[in-house]
Amino acid sequence: MKKLFKEILEINNVEGVIFLSFEGETIYREFSREFPKEADLKNRKVRWAMLIEALDGAREADAVFEERRVYIRKAESGYLVVVMDVYAPIAMVRLNCDIILPELKKRKASKGLLGLFKKK
Image (cartoon, rainbow, N blue to C red; front, side):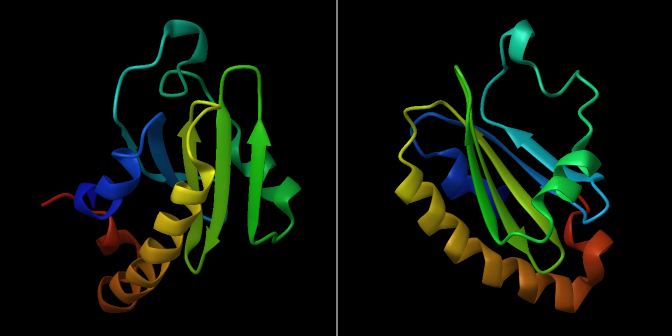
């Protein structure tokens, strides 16, 4: 799975990707670097289900905070969340998501949702 998200993680100022089920459960998570403690999404209990509910089926969303930007893209089997610095090139992130979504769909069809993210 890391191979699939490699291109996004290599974009300047992208810090990580998270793939969520439609119920808000984290299915896959990969970060290119460690976050400072005050912004550590890995150790905080984030209520993704509330975010998914707020999106109400939106195809994509982009939220900018003081020091972070979060881009959320709906896939056929869940939501792809890209966590980045505010200076990340969002057009490049969107383009890479456009490329990855068909691959996620193909893998889901052949392996099922859980098989899609199992580590080898």
